Image (tube, rainbow, N blue to C red; front, side):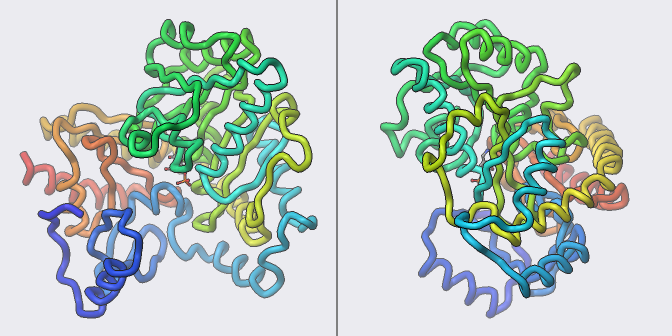
Length: 407
Ligand SMILES: Cc1ncc(COP(=O)(O)O)c(C=O)c1O
């Protein structure tokens, strides 16, 4: 927790809750000193009644903001019918949701799980199994520097940021990391021993970095040449955030992956991850080779279907408000020299600063604006898809003021 944080006054009740966490919860998070109580639309309210404009939406999860009436209604209804069946039986919503995802992605088959990292584990197993069918030496994975793929051992093994890997080494063998803008390095790293290439088309945790389209195309060609699987990690950038269903669909003609993993916004706050793959990649998994108890449960799948209906109505606004937001950030960049670059697409935006952004995030919070800082110097914005231009204007007033104080 930042020692210089400018927190709002906290009540005794809030102090008590934070005290219990300090005493009994694993101390793996550096939380801000607020206890969130409820949300409505793009706003969150803490237990002390303070209101926050939420431009981080639970790190890109609360795509419809908070307490969206259609989502609340579906949850209420479904919770009175059936929550969970396990994957021993069919239920009414996995098939329709998988069909919907196939139409959105152009990839035929879905595996349902509970989180991003669990989706990446499944993708890594598919890569390993695919390679293993060809030769015992074909298990290498090429991944990008600055990438982030989750926190399980498999996912950190392929994450291109040493800080996430170091304390847990030794990790999976055969992972090579390459820079995202160096096609020659990618060509050198990929060989007949490569079983998979992993790319976040827009790196989130790594600082909102767009992977150039020629690089995606080169990765596709190399994967084909060496019979490797191309995996796009769209856990953060997927399902509408860029104004297209998936970020890879921004390319023209579209660069198709063999596997796309996504999660965050899909069930509006309920845990749901998916691994969507073409038949070639899906052939790597036979019955019994992979599974999960909770993955794709009734409630999460039904909520996801409702969300995807609403998403179609919101798509034009994601682009329009996203463009407006980027324009307003660029205006801030004209005024505040500390801004080095504004990056992103749709409602996945970053402002790179010439200094650490942690204190700026804390100061924004004290002024009722929730944002986040990633890669030390990049202010990250993953707002709900229902964001309006008026919300953007409110955020700009706070950012302008806070950046001015740090000049
Ligand atoms: C690109 C990417 N991959 C994987 C993950 C891990 O997802 P989860 O935290 O749901 O396990 C994240 C989470 O931020 C992510 O942004």
